[in-house]
Length: 157
Image 1 (cartoon, rainbow, N blue to C red):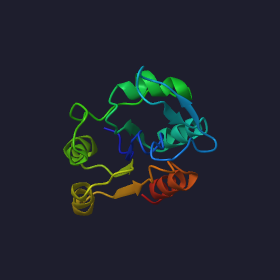
Image 2 (tube, rainbow, N blue to C red; image 1 turned 45 degrees about the vertical axis):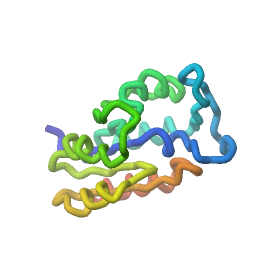
Image 3 (cartoon, one colour; image 1 turned 120 degrees about the horizontal axis):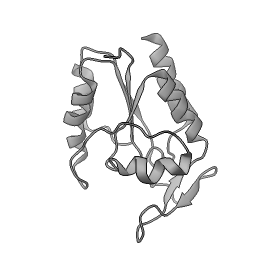
């Protein structure tokens, strides 16, 4: 088993800043699912995803499930990622924690999400393995600072 840290990446609110009033600078919009609002994506995120994948075992931790690989990955031109298996959407965000815990096991984990719940905060605080929660503003989305934070944390492990 790899000793690299597990790096978990949410999609909505992180890669897709859905709470922004308008499409932010540097982002594009694309309708992934007919009849739904367009998803926002930033081509620069492709390089950031590759950086994280080189630094640890990068997984999707999103309610999109495998659709993240099928519908969103092609927009960025990155390799598919393993997927944390959450309950079928829609589900309460608190229910992400057991699935994340199962994937993380006893390995270090960094979790990038726009909605770290009280249950998630308690889980992270109680883990014996190094754990980093990176909170992203869903009106802003993922920033270079968020990426650097994770990369610096991995370097200190």
